[in-house]
Image (cartoon, rainbow, N blue to C red; front, top):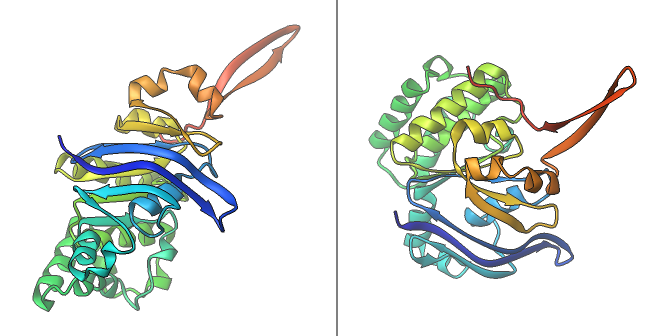
Length: 269
């Protein structure tokens, strides 16, 4: 498989003072399931923002499908349109994404911004409502949705643009178990259909379930290791060093016992 995204020597800081990413080097292949893991605050979301060109690095290069992605490249309208059409971003908090009066308006917004014909946009919106099982929300005002419904609508608003790549920030965040399961099964289905999926998480059971290739970000904002899910989950020393697992010590009578605790909450059955 060919590389669809490459990051070379990426550095980024907030206000030129607060380090967020240091010397990031990554290659992600077309059609791959890829995860960026680490504790909150290590730079996972910032890295997704750079990949999606929401912010640009202080130094280093972002390459998308063989083309450099810079502020200058976005001055070319055709490049910007193609980039936004091919890459969809699902934010951790759906309230950041949703702003139209109704659910159907949300699904129509992206295709119309890409200058698709009204009939095509309408067809895509209807198909996506059906695909995600949310046709009953069609005319619902966004502010009247539950948290799980908002997440489904946020996903739908991205899928109507039919992107090749999905960037997903913390898929399990603030979701009830039913919506978590729905979202994870959807990501698997989309990946099996050929979509490139890139997601962030600090939940190791999600890595175990989805079996992506994994990049581990440290609290020093660098990539500590990249490898398969089994390689990363089997490297106890690494996971301890980046605080994704830690030792718990408890007493049973006069005896002391220790075991490792990890950030697991999604369980497959």
